[in-house]
Image (cartoon, rainbow over all chains, first blue to last red; front, side, top):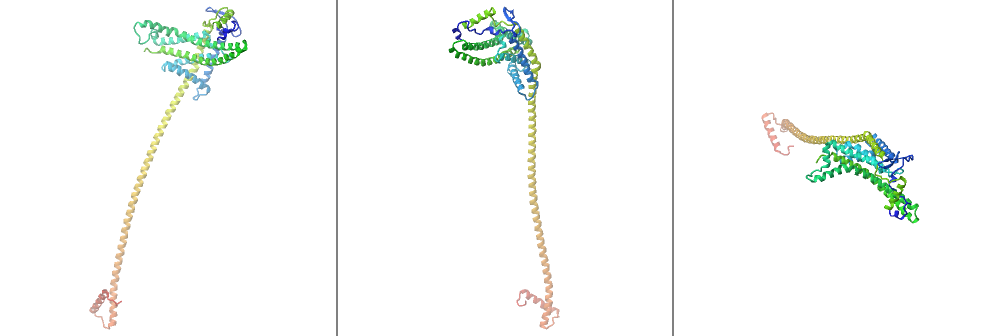
Length: 273
Length: 188
């Protein structure tokens, strides 16, 4: 990082938010104003990725589940493992065997959708995390928020649900004056925000880091004096290492997003203790 | 960091005219993400999840059914084995009993036969003895009369005296026989 301060400002342009603002496919340069910021109009790469991911996921699992063989082939085995992983470790173990079945399609779709879109950041020639675009994440977080709240209200009624989420069990007296607003904030208001920011920021930062290592290494090798070249090579080696770390983070973020979804649903369904 | 970011900001300011805030969403992306995920969810709920669930159910059923069938088979086999072992034991018992019976019967038969044979032998010996005695008696009788006649005739001739007199003759014979029986040597 300190190399940047050595060079004359202006020569090396480090990556920034602008690198995530991809132009429209086909080269249109029109923009429109939204919330005080100019946005590209037209179909961009992350939009295309989003649609492709849905098509790929559906095609893959449709083919994997179509045969329903008692002894599975390779594809069916992979599909069953993925489905079984979400169904058992995220659905049944968290939500509980009584209620989980109706949420499994949602959790499974969500997990595979986020995972593949995260992995797009690593897959060669695509190499862009769809969810580094905040808008894509906001709607998923909002949807999660609506789902667990609606599920809870349906089960406990409006008042019962908010009582369940805001009044901690086993606490009485004036301390409740402090606890009820805190619980309400953490269980109802903050959850969608943290859900969205966690996924978005991880994808954004990871990709930014990779761009930095790639461009910085390139700059050190091609633009600067020869004695800086080994450092550039080191930057590229680190790029590869960080890229592997990113694969782990991409999986973890998909897992955590769905895990939290399942836990919120479980919390909303929980009987009053 | 400051030196790193500043040029980027400068560039962005130069190119886009103002600073980019990545937290501000693109409205199309907001809607697109929701719509695409919604469609994916519906497709998965309709076409994928039920199939996988069916596979699980079928497999569970097949495994449980197989286990139950295997247990039934095992129980049947166990019962059959026990039955066969029982039959085998019965058969062994029966065989031992029959053998024992046969041995007893054999011994009995041998004993009976031996007794019969002994009786028969005794009877034969008795019979033989009686016959011999009878024959001897007969021989003694006939010999006695013949010897008497012969001796009288012989003595008559030798003595020249008529031994026609029955009384005398009788006395002579009696004496002669008595001598004979007393084992007087020289007469033979």
